[in-house]
Amino acid sequence: MRESTKALMAKHGWRIDRAVHNYVYFVFYYPYVFFLYHLFRILSTYFSWVKPIRHIVTMAFSRYHAKVISFGNTRKIFELNEDIAALSAKNKKIVPFRYAYKILLEEPEYIAVMDCPCKKTMNAPDWTINSCISVGRKTSQFWVEALGRKYNARKIPQQEALDLIKSFRKKGYLTQAFFKVATGGSTGVICNCHMDSCVSLQATRFARKFDPSASMAADSGYSVSHDDMKCSKCGTCASICNFGAIKVFDGVRSYDRDKCMGCELCVEHCTAGALSLYQDPKKTAPLDLDLVRAEYL
Image (cartoon, rainbow, N blue to C red):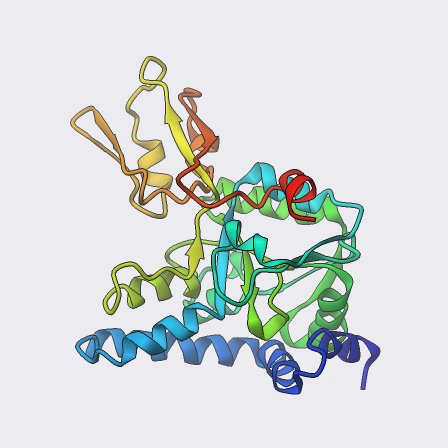
């Protein structure tokens, strides 16, 4: 057994079941995600009337979920040169889920990128496929050594990872950090996601046929301020939003704060400089490493 495999499985301690699940999840990444996507799609299309399925959805969403991250906070992760280990249940203010909420970034300079199973499942354009990023030696080294040929996994420097994020955001892809019980209950996997090609975002759509409040993703902790004096009502912000939070109709702009996930894409794409993020006290706390150091370590 490779040392990287041993290190990956050791994260789970005595929970051998979770260690095996972690190994299977990554080694069979694409068929695993492919199966779950089509299972959710079939259940939501043909069995949304079956009430017990709601409990299955709740169980799944408490173990596999994501946190939307603004670009400013993403940059801090990819410029990190020290270990971060915030492991207490206080983290639920940032990642408001029952089980997987650890903010654990060990040897964060060691980064790998590999093919995204969501984009492969959704038949996304070829240029988007190699876009799943791992931060931290344990998972990244396993990806490179065990999945290099299978999923085109390779080690990359921090700046290349950040440049990759930037290139996707220019095309309207938001940034998400994933927290899964199957991968140790902690962050470390960060991906470039779009509503059209992200199984996580699609799963929320499916799940809301059973439970309107269901969400596999937590908001970034931010909402968007709008300066009407600067706004040209061009509609760019509405077209870039993955969540339908902004609409421009007949020269009138509307903003649904509850739908907004605070991804920051609209702010970045506004050519008039009419938009800005603000930390919203009615939302989750942001995954801001400065905040984590100050209040969660």
